[in-house]
Image (cartoon, rainbow, N blue to C red):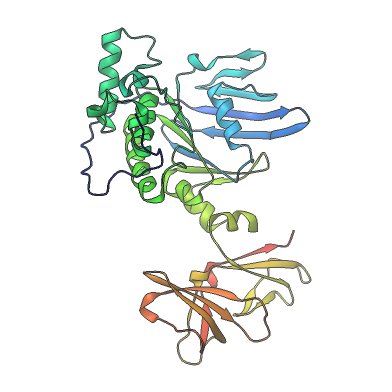
Length: 371
């Protein structure tokens, strides 16, 4: 039988199946204490200390190759740290000459490729791993989990007859059915198209919150982390560079690279003079830096708007693109070669080819010392 493309979206006219409720778990806390992981001569992780707090959804965020999946593998017990120790509910599970295998950690796993067994039905895939239950008990528990993710009526199908979103929900049901203390998710939505990804992600978030398990999501998508997480650890080159709530990381980035990871900015280089630094849109305060310091000023395109009357700085509108609720302008300011991007509300449509005056919201800029 020919199967569906696993990235195929479910038909938009198809009614959403009713969802049940997931059984609650006893959330567990995982703590990394100065954990390192070395492979050959390469330090994959360096001095990682973090806590996946009980009952909270935490995201490990960062570019590919930064070490976030390795953190997940260490937490699951499928890899051993080469330095430091890992604790689950205050008990050492790795380090100090001690290692607790994955099957004894009460941890659920969701992989990027779902890792479903193609020769097993949906129900059999979910039942797999329920070692402690009898056949009938395991079947009932699996059906309950499938009901919660809206797939009870597909229990007898094989994975190749499911869409990408349905396969992801089977993987979620399999992860929650043992009622783990911790659910670890390794980029589980990356294989879905954007429209389906948003819906499946929302459903998954609802299920995870109902289970009350500790949840850890690995992602390279900052907006996914902002939507999903209670707490974010931002990683770079095997280290944690910043942690906090989504709002904290978005509004108060630790450096320019952290800011640019979350959204696009106009970046203006300059040197501090008399407590300020010049930008195409005017001089801004930089008094926390000493004079002569080379800095970068980051201005969010959404912080630039049309000026009222004679206020602001005049710029030539080189290009204008309609974005639905917004429009994106490419501006050229006098004496500046590099264009500036502005995002305006569509209520004030601006056509290309003319000049207008613009101002910026100075509360929406960041200034960092140039590396």
